[in-house]
Image (tube, rainbow, N blue to C red):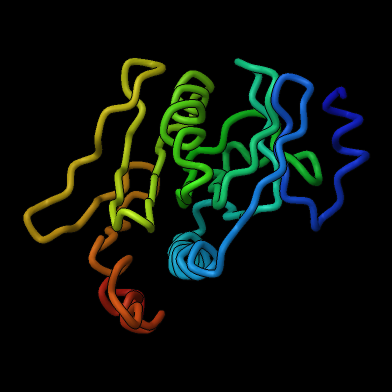
Length: 191
């Protein structure tokens, strides 16, 4: 199947990726949805307050030229200068930041295959949130096509490079209940 055929076949409710002409169906769980919702809400507020670009979420494809793929990140951020690469239902090229929430069936795909693809394609920042393992990792692109771990400070804060000024308290990810939007905005000085 060509990428164009895939676009014609898939609709707004299709959770699938296109890789080397093949369709890969994706699955999701409630915990996956809840952490995606939390991250989407807080990051979107930051992006809008700072007018940095556009935050999108699955199902939305990111077509990468380094390999014949149409990947569907859980969350993707596109900086203002890259908005002209939007093509309706897909992005032509890498997002500036991608968040993947890892599940049991996506671990190898997110940690190995997409990790390499995203780095080679030029995704500048890649977040991996592994809910089953209660582990979060953040990577920043350096040297053109290689990820290095982003620093987490002594307070458990990750400082985004792409979303300058955004700090993510990794404890928020595992906290039950998760902090309210108001609590996060106050922590960022946006309340």
